[in-house]
Image 1: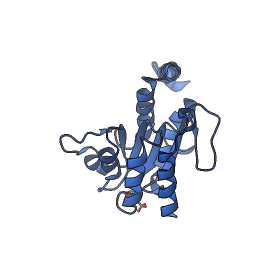
Image 2: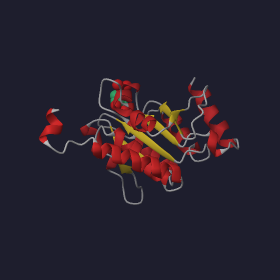
Image 3: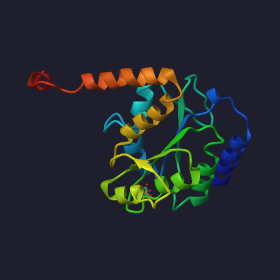
Image 4: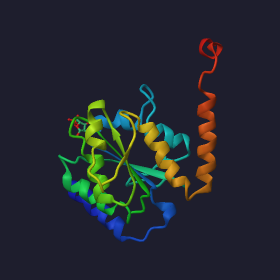
Length: 197
Ligand code: RP5
């Protein structure tokens, strides 16, 4: 139940866990209908999941702790439908060991990223407007309440930005990110032959 999840988050926040055992990145989204845009899929455009797994991150769930050094977790949290869960998630994020949150929401009232940014401050939150119409609500924050955001639908970029933040502290990630960036550049077509071959 919702209460169980909140209790678990609070318990994790109160427990001293080694940094290597906690996820660095938390991905939250307003609805499971945001999953495709937020995570990407085999069929659709690449998303945060694709970028993070390409960079060696593994998903950590409540039941499974993968072997990878760097991990992310995924939760569906709604600012309007499950506001208490949103509050608890954002409030416990830093103590649970998260370094950065990627938050996506769609529709016109895309308040999950901006509310999470306010509650989790000073933990950085990268907002993803799931649709074009969600953009004003994600980035329209008052002075003193900052959020950083990517363009509509670009959860792939949000993941890269999150890893950039982490790379400030982890040399290994810096090298991986550089190599990945070089690879992406190589994949850009530079001649008409590239396009037609
Ligand atoms: C937003 O409303 C969610 O982030 C989602 O993009 C949109 C629609 O949600 P569902 O009604 O499909 O669950 O809060």
